[in-house]
Image 1: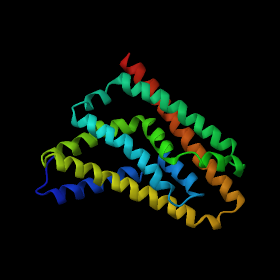
Image 2: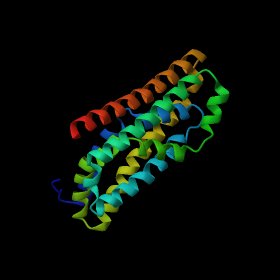
Image 3: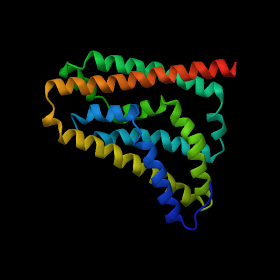
Length: 212
């Protein structure tokens, strides 16, 4: 990645690139919407779990392990495990879409752990960091260790801000949700999780055939 003339300009580019990634719909977005119906701050907790995995990934890339994230065996393994996990989550969510007590029981589980788990189960998360993320980290290293830390914090703040805003808006608008709206939203989010699960499995199988 071409370096910019100053750290603030570089961090501004990190912010723009990060926002385009975090605002794309995905499993973490679906989870934030669902749990946002009960707690306004749940997006912040999910972002903490997401950030724990990201901090580990940044450290590994900094130490030179980014090439391993692109290995077919790693991408296939994560894709299969993540795909099955998301299919299970989507099924469970769809099954309890009309049962508020069951949903409340699920929502009481740690959102930090949920954010960590969904992030770790997403093979495209690793691919993003092995490509775009590595390019950002390369630029950050020219500013020293402080630049790397600043890049990581800036990226995470973008994740945190978007997920918190999303859960806050969902929570504040929940009074407008009728029972039918509630069921439709949960059904859509369940379908989104299951759809990503199928896509992860398909991509893993396709990669396995190609690699084989």
